[in-house]
Image (cartoon, rainbow, N blue to C red; front, side, top):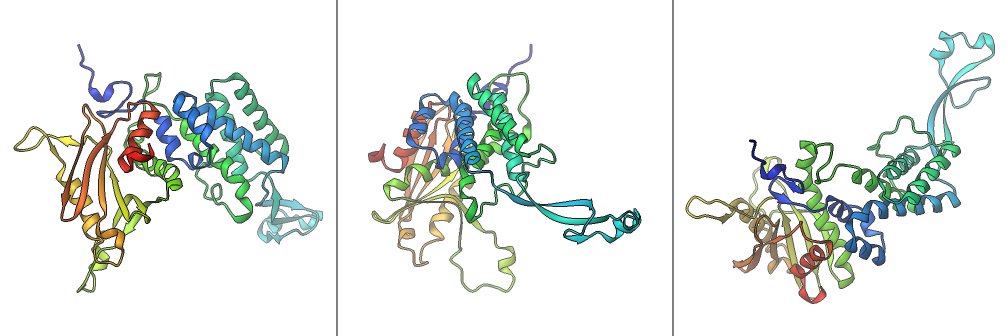
Length: 367
């Protein structure tokens, strides 16, 4: 009889229990920054409705864009015409002897709604129609996708990661929420950690730590701003250097903090380093111990910023935030004037419990 490994259990990624990847995806997305408080409460009440919520926002945004017309863009085209348009394709014209028939091959740009961005949205609507639970919402998404087709938005040559899709200019602000919902709709279409007919691929499992990292930063960006906090993610920290040799900059590694929280009014700075691993591991001389490398990392983030003219850095504190694995940990120590907290968040808890836990780590008064 084969023993089921911990990492093979439904709801686990390795040894880490995760009730719902949808919640992390939402927190990590740009869409979470744009939905209102009522929609956020719906998520906390029933995280299984997140795909329906995303599809509803996508449908609403597309309907609004259709009332004001879709965004246009210039697309390169090649055609054989009876008059010159754009640039002449001399090789094609000569090879096919088009001039003898009064024709000419041209290359030109055409203003059209059949842009990578609109094809991306159409594909997201079709994907959403297949994954939502509400029949009326699925019908609504399919109808909108059909409307885009009738307007000339094709499904050909769709490339999800085309840079032009998410390149938002000053005139494209109205597309921001629509694109954020479309992007999340594709992410939500990935398999979850529940039992099903298909297995989650190993490369995707390895990327969940990035999702966890972005989710923590996204959550704090939305929830703490109203309380006067400034939230920065993936900020590069500078070393407090001196007497540098000529080539040291080429080999000295950079430091990049996952999340930095600043509250100027109270003079607080918190540097959060997220780790998607168990907070405790077996030690050489004890049953369980903290990972020394993680401690050295957060210590370097804190101490290296002293003496650079930033008053918040002098007494900054640090948090090493891990998912809870078999136990909850919340311990702290002050090292050379900097408080460092080693703590966990239970990703198998309800969304309300996760929200409460993350907020109380920063300030219990705002929970």
